[in-house]
Length: 235
Image (cartoon, rainbow, N blue to C red; front, top):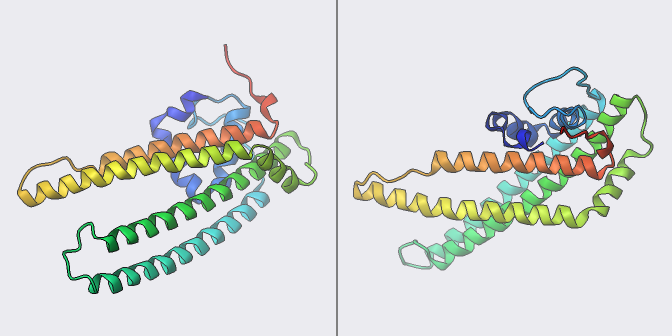
């Protein structure tokens, strides 16, 4: 299982697909976990989808993303207007001023809140899609799948909360160091020095962290739904 989580090439596939089509990724990962496929990009026979369930969850998820994006644009515009209003009344060079710090804090809080909502949506879709994948695989019909989904989430709520907090903390650390090295790069550019540009390196780090998080969260949800009996670890 660890091999699948750490395969670098799979990051290119799993991260964008999970962020846009989480149900599709979950159906595939059900196949990975249940068929003991330790190569996440290697397809084996038996991959099945519940197209109706997948389409329904994707539509709801994309509508949720659109609503969150609209809310983000509205609040971000509001924050920048407040910042401009206060900055005009503070006739100092706008570098690390209280107005900038307040704007940065408000924007970070907004992004963190939206990230938590997206993680919650992802968890719900993961659990529901795993149930539907199991139904297709076993040719059964789970009664009240949404009830099973929410009861599973509430039973394991401390773990999900811990996962969310740790993930946000990790990304806070990553973004802090990115901002630090970016400032050094800009300073070096102004002074005519050839400094390290962190853009590509930190983008790769973000993608790898997201990929491992997606894989781990799917695996935990898979096991939390009591489908763990299908996991058969190799000697």
